[in-house]
Length: 328
Image (cartoon, rainbow, N blue to C red):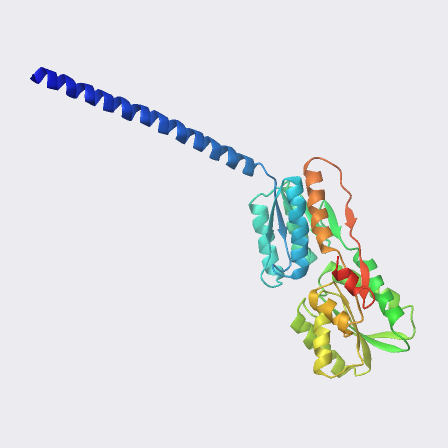
């Protein structure tokens, strides 16, 4: 009897052992399949080219449009686009972000040049480490960058000058607010603008100052300029927030006789054109810039030869076509 109980117990233990053993094998195989899937997914992600787009200001509407174009091109070309930038315009912060991008050995960098002395050496450093760099919006022509994508800024300045010439009558004194005097794109816009105005004896630029890419500073500088030069009746801004800042100054001083011309198509500028407070603005195509920059970077990474300069379109928007532009 005891022998029979022992045998039965042994059989039960054997059955339990076999059950646990086979269950262990089944679970192990499932885990191996899961790990394999995860490894495959990680491998796929890691094989996507990693391109960093460094903006001038993270939440700036203009740069958000560049981001949209870049990420759309990223989806279509199967590359990972990382969009970064300082919370407020800061050359030092942009430089730090560029240094980090180089240190992380990304597959490509798209960056704006705001100051040759700061950015050119870093762009060259990236190239020396086999990290291709495309400049966007503001070029670094003395660097080893593989291409520039953006506006032909001298021509954009000329177009702004022509907009003033065709919409301003009689002899006028002009005040100019530029984004920054250290940026290549701003200098070129100013040069283009002045080249057109110089051909018009009835028009005279009496003052030029910088807003440091700030709406508040544009307003402060414009107000000071208008107080110092009360004969100014035309104000021109060459960066996205300048015209809005000038408008604030004009309203503060109750100078309704000032004709304002701006740059870019931020929401407030377009609304001000509709209301008649701003005469016209030169509009760039930031979405196209972002899209084209990524497309060219992908072509370069695949071994294709790309042009050194890729200029995107510009046009003048005034009260006649502002609604058409906003409906696009």
